[in-house]
Image (tube, rainbow, N blue to C red; front, side, top):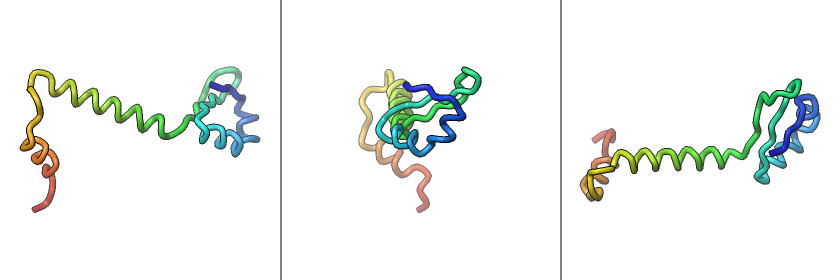
Length: 81
């Protein structure tokens, strides 16, 4: 992870976005303390998906395999008829 002072980040913001788009994470500092972090949006989405999958697996413990009826019920839940 690259670290850059806020004053330099302001000056080179477009270049920093290009780096983040290529997968780099950039920490922005003020007076030597990290105040913000620029990171690829895909990484956050992937982490949220992993966490959701873990919660689903934890909820399924002791319930056996999921049935087709449960899948259909979950799909249809909240749909207007």
